[in-house]
Length: 384
Image 1 (cartoon, one colour):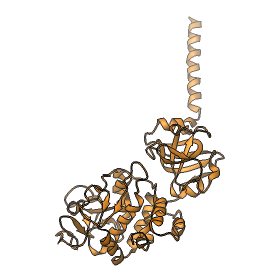
Image 2: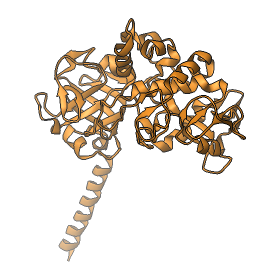
Image 3: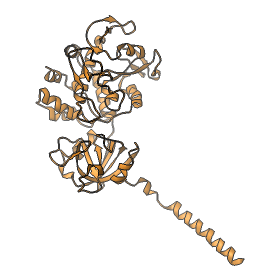
Image 4: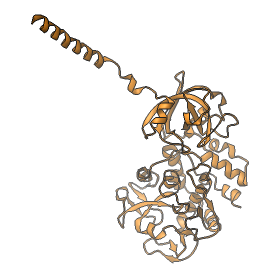
């Protein structure tokens, strides 16, 4: 009996010692980087660090190039530096502030190097990927975290450096390359973003509504008749993109508007004329078009110019949006009326409120800019 009791006591003490050792063991495994194969299996929108070798630049769902890189926007990582099977790669969307440091056009010598990327595990180019990247570090431990979003990451003229001297379709293509692959928001996140981008400078508790110009409490967003909601200036049915991340959540054309006024505008194209709206004075509409108040005519035009350049259909899940000189475009990926938009761009020049909004979207949310706010003269260089 004594031997049995002694054995039992020894067994209990062993368990206590084991528990103590476990409790004192660092839990570094929880913070360890995932391999690329693990990242491929866990595309669950979680934020993770992934370690892999740079094997090239993705340009399509199953296409990764290994030379003559067109830009600095993306990387492909694999568990082997010699991997050629895209099914064993994870695609990384590089944020604008890290492109010159980790983009292959700027630094082709990174191919074959080991990097650790921290971001959200979610598809990119309709392929397992990492988006909303917050940091990229080299194997030697040097890290490049996302800077304070209140500080400009790139001077505006440097941002457009590669567009200098270009005109016509060549300029349009280069601007697309510059503003493409922005950080995308969920549609629910747009609510909070608009409270900042469209804040009333005279009252931080309010937003300014696009068509009425009314200053209204930020807290009154919703679906009620006198609430404000999220207006797609490029009507979301024009291209049938809905509220999908990308064009459906792009802040550069989303604005707070009165719910009932937004309902009247619907998916109408833009043109002059019609009946004045009883609630949104200065706005006119008829069966096929909407004319906004004079104070935002240029704003509307420049938002549409942006959309026509940003979305070129070069990614499989994005539409090819274009401006035309008609109305009644319906679900086609077109918006009009181009001749009127050019007129509005000239008559209502860029103001400080537009510039401030552009800066906030660039620094705090999407990390891309509307070129036609920074350079309104480019409108006529493209749509002359």
